[in-house]
Image 1 (tube, chains in turn orange, brown):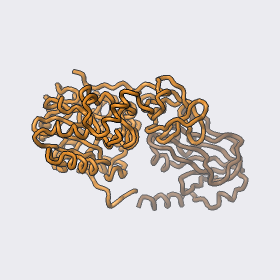
Image 2 (cartoon, helix red, strand yellow):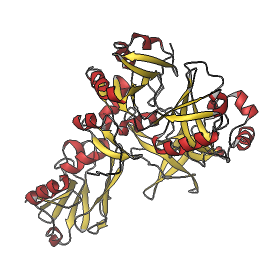
Image 3 (cartoon, chains in turn purple, yellow):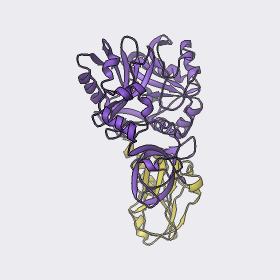
Image 4 (cartoon, rainbow over the protein chains, first blue to last red):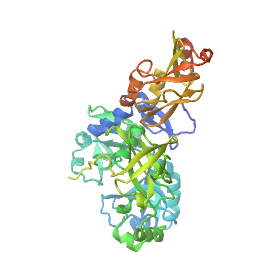
Length: 369
Length: 125
C-alpha cells in the first residue's frame, strides 16, 4: 500500500514478496514487517525453533589501515585493541556530550575491522568514521553483500548441515565459512537473545542460499515486527528509541561495554562526561517495566511516581508473546531504578500501575560452549 | 438487518434501536494479532466520530471510532481474557460494544456489504 519510489530494496525483496510478506518502509528500505503467519507466531517460532531475518538494510563496513583497532578507539569507548583475530564486541559512537550517535558491532579480522551499523545511521556513521579516521584508516561500505540472521535454539543444528565448522564457534565469534559452497562471513551473534548467527552473503548468492535455509522445516522467515518484540524481551536496546544522542552509555546501563582500561584512559568523544557519570552515578537510568494488567504501554508513554509527578518516559513498549503480558523499557531517575519500585504509566490519559522489573524479561540463551 | 460499514473499517449491526459495533475482517487482518482491547464504559454517552475503543496489536495501538451517537449499553467483556476473538471472529463474537442509538439516520451514510467490498477493492489497487 505504501509504495514509495525512493525506498530501496534489499536483494531478498522478491523472496519476501513471494513468501507473502507485508512490506513497509523502514530506514529507507522496503522491509518485511511480517509474513502471513503473523508477528506472534513468528516470535514464538524463533524462540522454539529457528527464524531467518533479512537485515541487509544494515551497513556492513570494512575499516583498514596500519592499526585500525587503535584508530577507531578515538571514536568509540569499546576495547577494540583487546580483541583477538575472530572476536567481536558491541560498542557505540559517542558525541562530545557523552551521548550515543549509534550502536555497532566491531569484529577484529586480523588485517582489518568488520563493522556492522544501523541502517538509519549508516550515512552519518560512514561520514563520521571516514573523517575521524582520516590519515589512519579507510572506511569501505560492502554494498555487494546481503546480511541475514538465523536465530533460535535450532539455528546451529541447521547451519551445521551446510558448514560443520560453525558448531564450535563461540558466542561473539567470527569466521569466514563456505555455506553450501558460498563464501560467507559468519558471526555467532544476534538480536533475539537466542543462540544464532548473522551471515554476510555475496548479493548474487543471497537469494538462493536463503531459499535453501528456508527449505529446512525448522526454519521460517521472520519479519521486523517479531525482531522488535524478540529484542525487547531480551532487554536489548534499539537505537533511536532506547538510545540516542542525548542518552549516555552509563544511563543506558551499557557500562559493561566499556572495559576497565577504556574507563581509566578515556580518549573517546565525551570521555570526561562518561567518566564523571561512572564516578557520580547518572541522573536517569534505563530500566525494565512490567505494566499491571494487559494494556501495553508504548514508546513515549509518560512515567509518573505514585503521586502523579512525571518522572520519565517509556522508550520501547509492547506485548511479550513469550510471557503473554505487556513489557516495556524506559528511563527513570536513579532513585526509582531499583527493581520492584512502583510507578504509574499514563496510557491514553489513564494512570495505570506498573513496576520496575529485571531485564532481560526472557532469559538469554547464547551459546556458551 | 444487515451489516453496515464505515471507511475506517468498523461494522454496525442495527437490531431495533441497538447497534452492535466491531471491526471488519479486513481490519483485523491489517492489524495482526490483537493482544488487548480497551472497551468503553457502560452508561457513557458517545457521539458519532468519537473514540469508542482501542485495539492493541503486537505492533501498535489503533483507535476505533463510533459510527453512531448514543448510550453504551453493553461491552464485550470477553475480549479482556480473549482479545484474539477479534482476529478469529471479527464480524461476530469479536464485537466491541452495543449502543442504544439516538438517531438511526447516523447509519444512512454507511456502506452496505457490497459497497464495502468495492471500497476494499479500491484500496488494494
